[in-house]
Length: 98
Image (cartoon, rainbow, N blue to C red; front, side, top):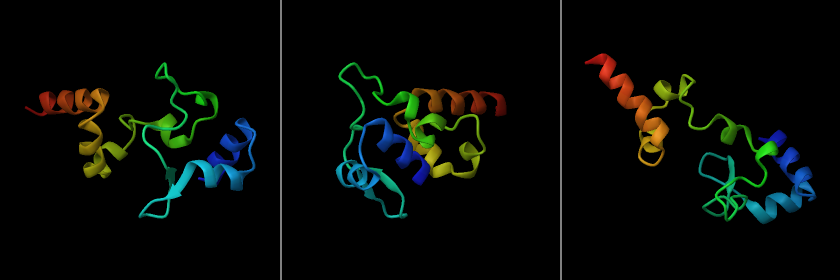
């Protein structure tokens, strides 16, 4: 989102165009995503160096308290493969449905 880019670029002291060029690329859906993985703002201590300014997707992840968990099942299943929180939520739902 452009509001995320504006907020982050200001936080790191860069122009938006410089920030995009250095850190972002467009994915297949036309959304900006980081060029590198892990995130370039992930510190050596595994903490987010821009936490107070992080993008809305980062703040919302892993989406377990939103309808995304059911409306975007492929994304939920993908997230459950690497995020223990998503896995545990799905497991709890499964146990309740037994």
